[in-house]
Image (cartoon, rainbow, N blue to C red; front, side, top):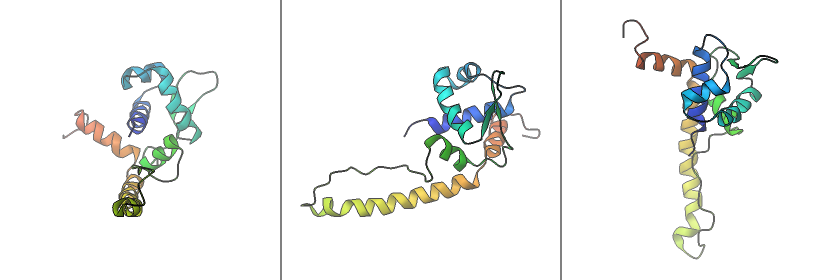
Length: 144
């Protein structure tokens, strides 16, 4: 699995907590990557109406309330898919072997169950949940 989702979440939390629009260069410093990678992710987030950039102005802003942006919406945006896909199955099992002949349907059902559970959880969690957890982790919440 790649790290596009964690990068997208990092970008979105950073942008949502910023006092002013942030450039891809500024975001890249925090994420620990290069600005071109940030631009690839932000293009996908803009296409999904999660981020906005203003014509003639530098930087990105969050489009919408973090409490209304689910982690599944973010997942869909960056992977350009309607379903969570975590696992692949090898393509050429030997049909002459009892295991090879039956492994695909068994693993497909198992993997889809896990992916459905993951998808349901991502639909229940919002960007605001991540922001709240980050604030607690950083000791920025009073009484913590």
